[in-house]
Length: 114
Length: 112
Image (cartoon, rainbow over all chains, first blue to last red; front, side):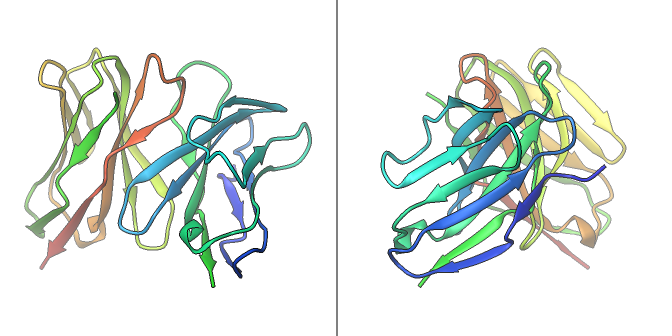
């Protein structure tokens, strides 16, 4: 049973470009979460999605960041017009649809902004 | 508000026990988790405890929860060099949906 798959593992962008990070949840999981880890810090919650719905986006920056989880295909975290401060590791987690189940994490995407 | 704190570093000798501590502030915590992160990798779920439990044991891992003091600990028995990693505690809360609030992580270094 494959775990949470994130790609790419590493992404380099120049300032002003767009970054797209993908996450495929574990089989049978319909809840997806995105977290950001800045260097030397813990993970900070960004957004929680179910299929075609954003449930909680209280951790998302107000501008340039968006997330989706379409009916088909992976969840996408999109960052427009990237700046140096967006450099971080972005982790996706997923959990089953029932009850308070623990979240399982992918290996993350390390985003570097030149 | 939600705040989770951990000490930054812990160094132990191989074969000794390690105890990693965590404090949290939100009294409505429902579950508390321990995750392990090795360099360049994602987070591996080690164990978790429901907030109405005091203790949970799983092989070399023992989790103790003092709900009154809002204190959580992870004990690793017979610590090995492969246990060297960063350990994060995290909580989910009744009013917070399913999102996790993480501590800053404790870097465990196991010396020979």
